[in-house]
Image (cartoon, rainbow, N blue to C red):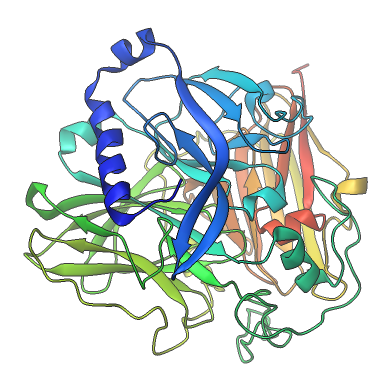
Amino acid sequence: MTLSRRGFLVASAASAASLLIPARIRAATGPLTLRAETRVLDIDGRAATLWGLTNGSGTQGLTLAPGERFRVDLTNALAEPTLIHWHGQIPPNAQDGVPDMPAPKLLPGETRSYDYAALPGTYWMHAHIPLQELHLLTAPLIVHTAGDLAADRQEVVMTLHDFSFKTPEEVMAAITGAIPSGDDHSAGMAGQGMGTMGSGGGMAGGTMGGMSGMTGMSGMAMDLNDFDFDAYLANDRTLNDPEVVRVDKGGKVRLRVVNASTATVFWLDLGTLGGQLVAVDGTPVQPRTVSHFGLAMAQRADLLIDLPGPGAFPILALREGARERTGIILASPGAAVAKVAPLGADEAPAFSADLTQEAALRALTPLSNRPVDHAQMLMLAGAMSPYVWTIDGHTWADHVPVSVRSGERVELTFHNMSMMAHPMHLHGHKFQVFAINGRRFAGALRDTVHVPPMAAITIAFDAGEAARWMLHCHHMMHLQSGMMTELAISSAA
């Protein structure tokens, strides 16, 4: 479908109206529907054929009412097999959405049913086939609580993407020097070269993506952006034609931000507005007042924003280490909306290399205190040339599982010995950040944690269902090039 601004607003209103139907009545009418399909967007005056996850109202993604189960019929309307992962949710392992672990991919024209108890909060869904995520086969998944409705705040979802007019295969070829072998999980050893391309959908200049001078905790140069995308999107739009959200309800907003990009860390910039950060990765944290907040790939943030009065207020997402930006506009009824340039005056800084942001977060309901049954360090490594990324020296092709028993308290330490950051995601579990570079504290509950170069982060969780659960970097090019292993949980003794 072609999505105009007016069409987007009308469809969004229809989707919101569906929430007025009680969950018990909606459940009685059958499962929700979701289609993986092709769609066409206008990106800065140029037609772009993308993929998407379209609900029964014709919009992208799903919103569930308080207490509503995730009862969804997923249909593959694409011309090739796919499979969707419900990122951050904890379904039975058979419904997790990783090809052949254990469910096979969904064939063209096939429909598969899902049914599990949904976790409340801000989540998202995406193809667990890296090159398909580069097609933007992603969408938000919002699960409301009774408290959300009682708060009487206007809900605004802001989904961030990076986009290239090149095919996913061309993007990988530009980065690695060779098109991947086609393995859905990992190509093992990637190409040996790193050719330099021009800006506008090419490899970022120099060994640091044009960001010479950025340094990590070790004082060494960091590699920030390994590809210059053609556009950076917020709700499928650039700042040349941003979504303008007319704010009612006294200017009170709950902003849910999803970084669904494949390879871009964003700084969320609230401008003159202050906001209360109340959740990360779908889970409540002790509220913090913020005006800037960083989001690595796959991370989410919920913020409560009160507009100070009438006017138009840009909510911007700044690409780390670069001038590119995207965003939406919150505007009171009748307010004039000024144009915001898609390039900022200055380059945004690198994202929280010293982890001060992460160290300041505290879970509202932390894990219980109990002894650790299994502790293990995982070494993250890799380089831009050859473009290969590993966990404990292995790619997915020869990975060594992390083996634990169901019910054990597990601590894993991600020690990043490379000069690129890695957003590490564990399937089927919530984990708590428990240490940064050996300094222990009780941090946020997450499903994805950003590990900067030459840093070490320790997480803790209680091992769940006895099954194979993916553990990987959520930088899609790193995942495609091998940076994935598994958490192999056996039954309790």
